[in-house]
Image (cartoon, rainbow, N blue to C red):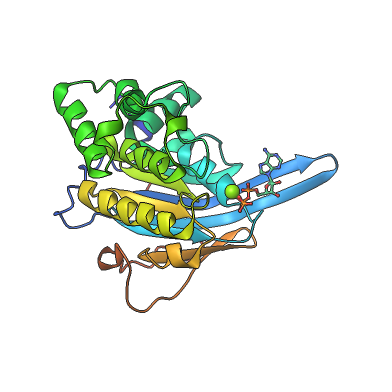
Length: 275
Ligand SMILES: Nc1ncnc2c1ncn2[C@@H]1O[C@H](COP(=O)(O)OP(=O)(O)OP(=O)(O)O)[C@@H](O)[C@H]1O
Ligand SMILES: [Mg+2]
């Protein structure tokens, strides 16, 4: 694998196929700290975040505005780097990679859904859909066919040549979902994916997201303000005072069947030593 062989802690894990038993640690955060300086003030946003997410799990991340949810997603995505601590995605220690390698890894192994601006307005639906595949160098007919099948599945197979601004908000978000999973990422990060939609449309988009994620067998970390949306997740985590706190749950949402692990590590728990 091109990105940071030397820093891969467990080696690339086999891609989850949905039927296999879940493997540990699609995502592992250890002692993650991030602060921002504004003038004289140091704003300590993340103060030692710990998390362990297994393959195929669906985790919802909640917390008040300004608590650091997007900051945390940026660190997991490798868009930003922590002041201290580690981010392992699919067995690769992202925080030890160069910026270029983080970008390559992100293109290859992660998918994204945001609240706004999901689609590039100057590209058609089809071009938007295929972009991550092209960036990942996967332009074979098999990959394209799967992308088109996903577009059919989200009900927009007949809108390939449409411009994003001709689609409704819910339709745009459905294209974004197909695009996020088309390259079979190890991890999907969603930041309020239904926040901009009316409740009914939001529920439909969420249903679709849960189904697609289940089919591809990928791991989903979703930031949301909606308790209803969060209830669909197998695990709920609150970002409180710069740390993640797991909510005890009875019964389960999607992915609950996979998630017996506690996820939040005890103080001082260590990552496996880097190879
Ligand atoms: N680049 C930055 N420079 C300075 N401060 C920042 C930066 N990025 C984030 N912050 C601050 O960190 C805090 C957390 O921001 P973040 O965007 O992570 O919150 P959030 O939990 O996603 O909130 P929301 O629910 O409103 O999206 C905020 O106080 C914000 O002002
Ligand atoms: Mg945010």
